[in-house]
Length: 365
Ligand SMILES: Cc1ncc(C[n+]2csc(CCOP(=O)(O)OP(=O)(O)O)c2C)c(N)n1
Image (tube, rainbow, N blue to C red; front, top):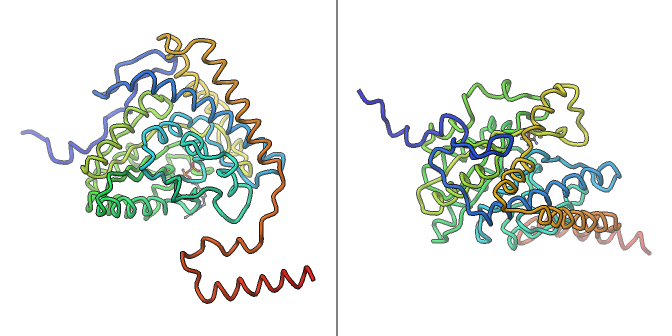
């Protein structure tokens, strides 16, 4: 008797999709996915070099007191960059606090990306203009925003896709499950991309979920699902390109899980040596996504030594620009606190604003 069921079509690959082994050699574990064109891979590599340098710079600025907090995505560059490259300017990106490098890859101003992490009241960029929602700290809420916005865009006849990033720990939140269910029922053009980096702060994946892989969580909701080696940029880009095309074609949402690793601590406020072994981190350093892609592109003569030097120099001057921007003191206007709260300020908010304005005036008098 055949055991084929409608669920089979939704199931992820039994092992994570992979084009490159850890040493950068080509392997045949891609389950029928197509390798993206060479120029796309070179662009991914350029952005990964840039993103890694940005990440190091932002971490340094935190140590210097210029940023209040910075959650590093070191080791997750393939996921970060592929998320941006898989989307068009018309698509919406819903990032978390960990996804600043995805925003860099999308072309946002680094000074604007880091405004929130500097401790200012507002997200520094314009979500409507950039089609990037504010970086979300309440876990998994962005998945509902993405599902709702995707549904709304479909009803309006727009062809755009909403793409939500989410961590492994956040998949335990009810919001994630509601978002998958809603998106599936209404065939919303949404992609949910889980970066399974092994930890939710100090909670390891084994204590988070007993699922064979988080990708299997989609099937119960009727969501097309896939899992991919998150440190293989070729594979992540190929799988996300397909997922976005599926959603854009009106075939419903897609859940993709990338298996990756958080190389740094949760944030600068966390000491990861208290809950994980150095040997484990070293093992994952050997699976570095930037070096893996670099080795592959070099072996195929798709990048030269000069190209690599050029990309690194570009990243250095980008980092210098980030330093200059963040080292400049800013004096936020206290009244800006009342902006962007409602499209039309409420009576109470207007009264509070007037009260603060009067207090400021009294102080200056
Ligand atoms: C609703 C909610 N509960 C708890 C927290 C506190 N918190 C912040 S980050 C985090 C861990 C999230 O881990 P994961 O989803 O795996 O993402 P990662 O930080 O590894 O990228 C927790 C519990 C929060 N921000 N929001």
